Image 1: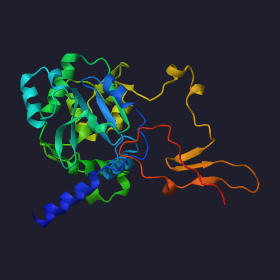
Image 2: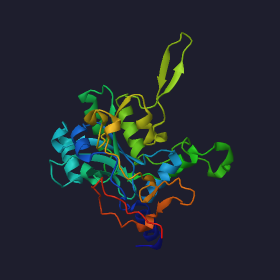
Image 3: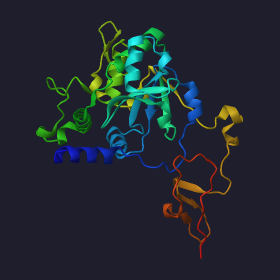
Length: 307
């Protein structure tokens, strides 16, 4: 392997390596797995370095999006079923997603891959089964495409204030033949799949002289994961571990009774209002390393006691 290729592979590996979760995800994965339907978009918070970069650039908690295609037998087209099998040789009863992944391109993965992540379902409102199959067909035709890192960088430059970026660094998203037709990023590929059946994500609205509105398709290369969350044409389905309806009232939720307040997981303190006693802080250094996928939502965080 030549040095440039080795360096590129090392950088991609560094960017995509996922950190061990430090707290349980904010969704009930078993419930989400039951609720999701073919054609739904699944948003992922992400735990890698590139996820942090995307969240910073897009100013959103969502760093990745995937299209849920169901189990292999949920796909009507036999040729597409065969194509999925050529990219996925696991259990045919497994729930699957198609996604564009840095370093791997457009691939099929089991939904189970995200059981440790905070997820959200974005469901295209009113999408027919026939069009849902067409959306999945469009996406599946991209299997094997490489991940378009240049488009991601272009999008990052495009999202920054245009006037403060030197001309030579400005985005080339709108240049003729910018990018390659055999490359894609996660949200752009999914947005293009919905555009193939003329389903709106975030169209540009134009008001005509008679007061009526016209929808103009938006450049699919500009889409980021947050746009599916923001879109008025997608229903948002959250699957929390505990719902108000299950407890009659939010006042009955299982709150911690020790009076602690947390800035983040492992950064908690017990407020004290006495004149001579400061706040009793708990440093993240004092918290033991989290398990691979923590499941105990009630695990207490040890507190320091003042000398």
